[in-house]
Length: 217
Image (cartoon, rainbow, N blue to C red; front, side):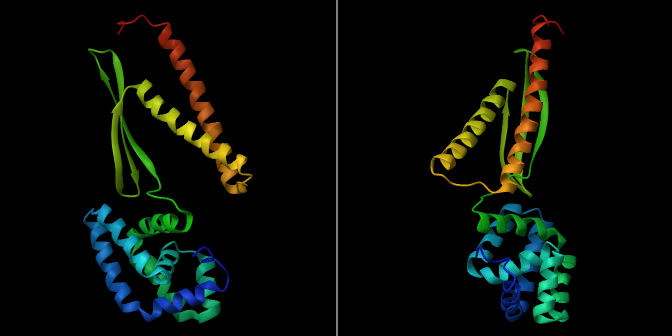
């Protein structure tokens, strides 16, 4: 439903929701229970199933949970104040569901899967090998995607794979004469600058380690 944000769409979406309001609220109660219990994988899968089986109602709930003033304004202008108020209540009643619904909407609308939202990182040191260790858990919302532990050079090897994959995707786009939208391009430039800054810092740290005798400290 690529046209979900078209100006004439909110009314149609909300009418579908209003026809199924009671059942949808019962489902949201179940989903909130999963969130409270920390069953994030089951929660994500249930929301995906909901989106597949009833896309119009899913989009209504997802847009309402983000608290978009633009969306509420369109609903109010097309259907009146009462439906808009009912949807505003969703955001206040189920705040814990805002992020998982937003991530599933991104999967469906933008062909993403488990969008990465952060890393939990810890560092230790293996004294016998004289090697620092990096451990991290990658997660998407409340869903743990994978855990990893390795040395700094092993972590950088993983990072190099991702940079190579990024380059491959951009080269393919250029080869096929595909455009890249300005938002994506701007974010890509920001990420590259951040990466360059971190690599410059890494260069300084490596130079300092080169001057430090092995086994000293």
